[in-house]
Each structure stands twice: as C-alpha cells, then as structure tokens.
Image 1 (cartoon, one colour):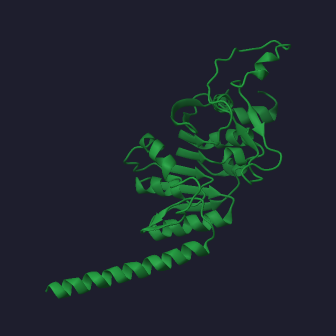
Image 2 (image 1 turned 60 degrees about the vertical axis):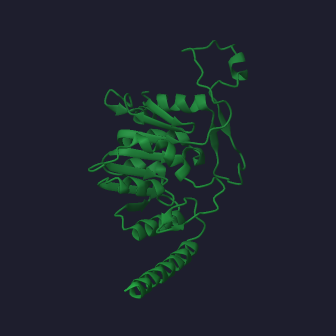
Image 3 (image 1 turned 135 degrees about the vertical axis):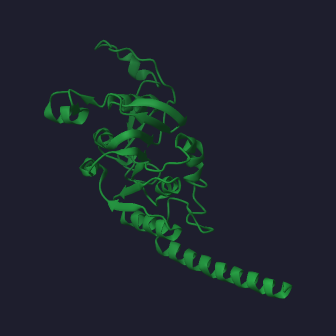
Amino acid sequence: MATTETNVIACHNVDRTTEQTELARRIAELGEWFHNIDLKGVPTAPRHFLGDFPQVKWKQIASVFPEDMTGATVLDLGCNGGFYSIEMKRRGASRVLGVDVDDRYLNQARFAAETLGLDIQFEKRSVYDIDQIPGEFDYVFFMGVFYHLRYPLYALDKVIKKVKGKLIFQTMIRGSLASPQLKDDYHFWNKDIFNNPDFPCMYFIENRYAGDPTNWWIPNHGAMEGMLRSSGLEIMTHPEPETWVCETTHAQRDGKYILDHELAGTL
C-alpha cells in the first residue's frame, strides 16, 4: 500500500512539474512582465526591480476593500498584467473590467486570468476615451498611469465620470512629501511661495525619466492632493505614500461634471 501511495505522489509531482514548465514557457513567450503574478506556483516577474511588485503595494491597500465583494463592479484602468483585476475577482466582484492601451499587457492579463480560471473582461482603450464606457463602477483603480499621461488632469476629470463609489489612485511622487497649508489667494507680486519646496508642483520631464519617454509629469505630494480635490474628489484615506482612496463628493456643479464645464467655458 505504501509503495502504491508513493507512486501516486510521484506521478502527481511529475505532472505538476510538467505543468509549471509549460506555464513558464508560455509566460516567457508573452514578453517581459511588469506585474509579478503567481500563476499556479510560477511567478511572472520574479526579478522585478521593485521586488514582489505589485504585491508590495497591495499589502498596504488591501484592507481598503471588503473581504467579500459579491455584487461589486470594478474598473481597472491601465490594468497591465491584471494583478488588481485578479485580486478583485478573487474577492467575489461580479464584474471586473481591465483596460489598457498596450497589447502585450492585455495578452498577459488575459493569459493570467484564464490560467487562474477567473472571468475577467479586458479591453483595449485609451484613458482619454474612458468616459465612453457605459455606466459607473463601485471601485475604479487608477494606479500607475497618471505620470505616464501628457494630459494628466484632463484624464483624471474623465475618469471621475466612471466612479460611483471609490477611486483608488496611485502615482509616482517626487519632491516634497508635505501637505502644505495654503491660502485661498496670493498677491500677484508674491513670488516667494514658488521658492518653497512644499508648494504644490508638477515636474515636467521633456525627455526620459528612468529610461521611459512616457514619464511626462511627476507631482509632489501637495500638488497631487490639490489636483484630486480640484477635480471634485474628497480624500477618504491615504493608505501608503503614493496611494489615495477618494470619493466624488463634489465632482458636479449644476448637474454637470467639472470637465464639461471647462470644455464649455462655464467653469
């Protein structure tokens, strides 16, 4: 009997090793991964320069979400390899839609979801067209996209139109980490405030940062919080240095979104 059991275990181990070898081959075929996802014991980006990314981020924000998300709808903008979409589906979200403009990332995300047996929708779409998606979502992820956009505030104002519940927003931050106390107005000849490193500031990258030509605008802490508020969001919590959880408490005026007022010249 013991010999039979040993043989069964050995065969199981051989089958598992064969499956993992095939998974590793498929993962490599899909190109370099930015999201490290555990696909049945095979990591997709085990040598990521940020470590176990984005698991290191997720550990700091996971408590923001209910353990049971049955019935919730989720929009994951710039979904990349699908890490956050997968985590939302694992918690029982009824509909998860991941959006990206990069075919490589979308192919990776679809493969990851299929491998894990998760029903997640993925769609190729620009963030600038995101307001064309029908309906609103209980949770909207806008993680690691903002600084890659040439027109970031325009995109943020469009994203807000899709938020029914919470916006989970993350961006690279450089410069001051302070949240400055600001006056409502400053005199025209007051130039000293711009010499204060804590004053809200966006750094423009003309060429490349970290070898990436799509790193366009990088805010300091004060600028990012100011932009979130100016787009009609209330910051509910700030679970880690680069991430804010917001709600759309004042995103509309006279029944119109701030973006629509701006484009119509009525803001």
